[in-house]
Length: 585
Image (cartoon, rainbow, N blue to C red; front, side, top):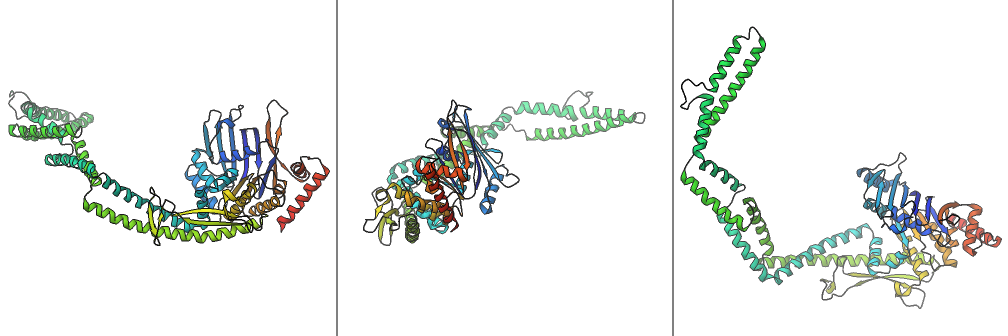
């Protein structure tokens, strides 16, 4: 759960700390006091978009810090992820998170004492936190979101089926698009393939080898200067070990080294250090002998064959003809040929290949159709369970006669959409299947069943959203749930029922509720009040925990706008007493 949240320099909040409990945390306060900034701060802490316009001019940056303490499998997974990224948990297992946003819009994130990308906070937020506000209610009105809600409810097995379908759909569409492109551009592909084949034929006839141009260049250098190289090598060999006609009395290097060695060895008995030098001269003589042998071999390899030189000239001319057309050097020509062969396969529009692709298309289409049918059946089965579960919750939210129906509708294909045949019916197929999902509200007996966007008022939509969240909570999900004024448009008995349902959620989840309803606030395990201070030159807000008498006064303010009214306080105390009994039940 989120144990602590500190917000500095964000909107009207100068510096405040929220200490949260594991149950139901309620946040209340006057309009404009800064309740929304608490939710905004949570969003920033878990990777939300940074808005520099909300940063206070003084100190010029907003900082949101949080302390997480997670248990069980989720806690182990989160700590492992953070450790792998270089962060560390505290000694008690808690994890510190931080997000900083400057007035210039720059943003930084820290997790476990280590600077990390903001995306890491987003990744953690997906596992830890679910925020529900009025914008989420509007999102639920979109068909794609309704389908996602049903798929989420259906469970892990259903999600694996969706993954299998999406993989097959992607491969099928790739083959369909490839086949259509080959057929549509057959003439252009054929012309391009002919040009590639001409180039490949020319390169194949020459058959260039990797690095061949450099090897030939070096060989030409040796052949063109063979006589000068021979003279130089011969003179060097004579100077080292004899063998070339020089003056008879001119000693070679080997003779001189031998004389030096013998001279030093003759005096080694007097000074042993001369013996060491004589040994080193012996090593030098050995090295000179090796070089002399290599020079003799080099002389033997020199060839001034004019025929070979002419053949190299012709070969280099053939290679230059290729490098003028296809690349800067021989290795580039070879790479061009490899790429051309690959592209030829892609350009192939032969009847044989088209037949093979068409067979593959039919095979994949059959797989997609089979998976789409299974997906539709699975959604319809889950729709019945989802409808029943949400309707039961609505009955407890002062909508006893309301019923939510989940319609799983197949889609007729249009000209621009791919289609598959499922159970003899041609249907439009998309990345999520061949279905449209529509949530419908049957508000009361005799009323028509209408789509949510047409049949639900603001208060009804709030309760439907809460009922759906209660159902989702029973199937798992993030451990911390945030509700930002989802009770808008609700009052009376319905407000009490919303408070009761949120309190029920708080038995298994940490719940944070921003509300203006005293009936909801009465069910809190911890009540926090955002209060505005206008005493200074700049308006600021802070958050404090209220208990006992202070809490009754806050509820009285919410009930009648009169925190010190004896009647209001009595009513508030009655609300608190009722809520306490309900929570114990």
